[in-house]
Image 1 (cartoon, rainbow, N blue to C red):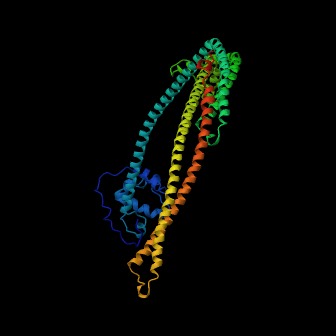
Image 2 (cartoon, rainbow, N blue to C red):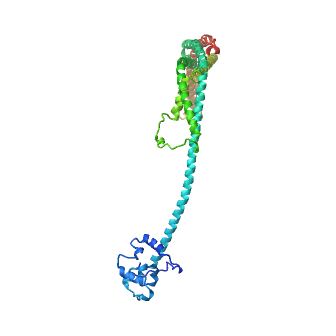
Image 3 (tube, rainbow, N blue to C red):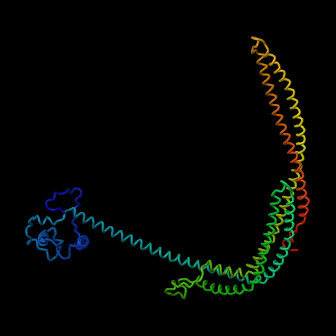
Length: 490
């Protein structure tokens, strides 16, 4: 809309559409303008709140706006007054741009409404299909869960029936295992006493041989293993006695749990086979809000498992405990035998090492004695060489002393004088070197003598160690309980 006195705007940016002989109905324009301009009321003759009489007089006299006038405002062409231009009338008119923009807005709103409606219809159809598939899947999942639940109950029923059938026979078997366990426990005392005596005798080793070697480690390990085996045997013996006492009490709990499982199996199996077309299906309002459960799958399974464990005087208690005792007897026998063999092997290797060390000490002692003899001979040869070099030094120094008596100009520093001076220095250096070597040889001789004494002491120590390990320890370890006795059969 252009105000009075404003500059004219260019309309080339909004091309005029092709003229059409079709004009929209008054009802469509009324509905569109009712939403866009709420202060317009097309049903009451386009009444305006400002200057109504002037505007509608002009409109009613304009033949181009006649289709949009109400029935009461139409006049015949013969009674129309001539159009008189009035600037106040131009002030209330719309521009062509306003008209085009209004039409475009209506078109866009129409397209938007239509597209939204189409999208809503498509989404609604898809929603119905999705919800139908989801509902079917939810019911299928519930049916599958019920089937799994029925299978779980059937599994536990079979387990409990099996335990009840095997209870009496396993009680006798557990009693036999208990007697074997008691006999095997008594058989472990002899190996323990032997290992402790070996440790006691090896404390009598002397000097450097009193070492925490592999034999001592293996003996200590053997003592620990035997004590550990005894502890495990005693623990399983206590468990066996307690299990024999609890068999009768567990049977009652097992029968009660089995009765509950049978009732639950019938109910869940009936629920599993219910369908939408089954009889007896009805509404139970609010039943989903009632939670009468007292357990979860973990606690439910644990409760039955605990009852089975209590009832296993044969299978879950007796059979499992009997298998544990059987395995324990075999494992402890193997552990003690393996450690016994490791101790014997380590002791044999230690005896061989000690004997080898003794032989090597004897060889080294012989070499030391030979070296002492040769060192003494070298010392004598060094002393002889020092004595021989002393004569050369005396001659050179005597020559130099005599040449100092030459008269006057004859005291010349000639080649003879220079060579004699060098000879004195060379011979003196040689004597000093030999004396230094003599001191080193004497020190080496003292070290050899000390080593000789050490090796002789080590020979005595190794002989004592060989006697303890070979004669005493290995003599005691020649006998060990056989496997049958260790597992309690004899």
